[in-house]
Length: 145
Length: 70
Image 1 (cartoon, rainbow over the protein chains, first blue to last red):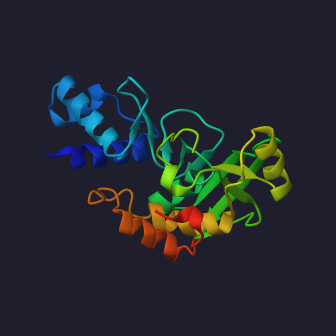
Image 2 (tube, rainbow over the protein chains, first blue to last red):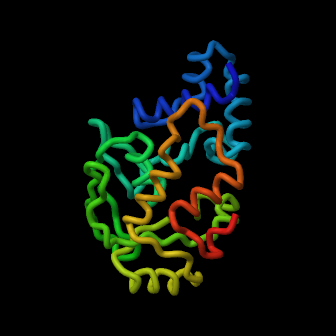
C-alpha cells in the first residue's frame, strides 16, 4: 500500500457514499493506526491530492467533490453530491462518466437554476462561469478560488 | 468559480467585491474543460499533473490567454 492507494480509496468513497471518509474509516480500511492514516492525509494534502480543513484531518475538498454542503448539488447515479464550485458541478459527471441533474444557485442574484448533463451534452449552454483567479494563483487560497 | 446568468451580473459582483474581472467561460466551455480535467480523476493511476500536463489540458480546451499560463 502507498499513499496513492489512500487517495484512490478517498475518491471511491466519495463516489460511493457522497462524503469523505474519516481518518478512522481510512485507517480501518487499510489496517493502519489513526496516526499513520492521519500522516498520509497530511501528505496527500501537501501534494494537492485533496485538501483538509485547516488544522484538522477532515477532508474539505477532493475536487470535484466537496466534503461540506454547497450551492452546487449534483444528482447522479441515484445519489446527491455537493460540488465545490460552478466548475466542479460539471466535474462530478465528468469524473463519474455519467448523466446528471444539477441544482445550482446564481451568484449575486441567488436565483436557483437547474442544468442537465445528458448523453455527453450540457443544457443551458448560455450560462457563464467566472474564474476570478489566474491559474498560477489557484492554490494560494483554494476556497476563494 | 461562480455561476452567473450574464456578464452584467459578473460586473456587479466584481464591483461589489472590489475585484478585477477574471476569465468568463460559457457552461459549454467549462463542460469541455471538465471532461479533460476530471475525466481520469477516479483512476487509481491518477497522481496529479505536471505543469506541462496542465498546460496541455488548457491548450486542448482552447484556453490560450495569459490567464491560463502555468
